[in-house]
Length: 223
Image: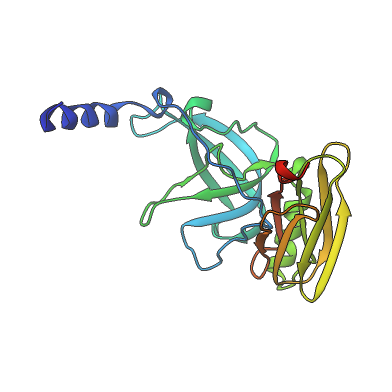
């Protein structure tokens, strides 16, 4: 394929509405894993109630929806009492399904110099009724308080998991589904792994993050 064909293909791709492109999301970090940046003017995190959902604008009726939200609690960005966010028309275009009258914890973004906020299904936006833990973390963060950190994750069932860090060595046994947790941790760097495994332990940094989700595995050669 020559350069002209590639250029034409890219031009045609740019003309496709978002609904024609598949939405691919990387794994989203929880709020306690990646706290907001209060100095970023192009990110906003707030609690809001949807006052209405409308078709798109500026000739993009088939590609976008607008949601008007009344902000009840602001953590960073979006200083107005009401804010309009744009989202894709459907799931393939990464659209988030806002419902009128419902309240949400919203994570919105915009490009530098752009007026309108945008929300994607890949963001940490969720119904407020499902966001109690994230709201608790955000309220502490906004007040300048740090909550106790924690690490949780998965492994094989019934494995002894060892955690080293902050001058301590802690152990727990994973449950029947392979889940485990270490609550009430101090800030710092930790190493975690299966106690009986010869594999190198994983490093978990909780100096900035307040939590971590990890997967650890037993060395199959030791079984």
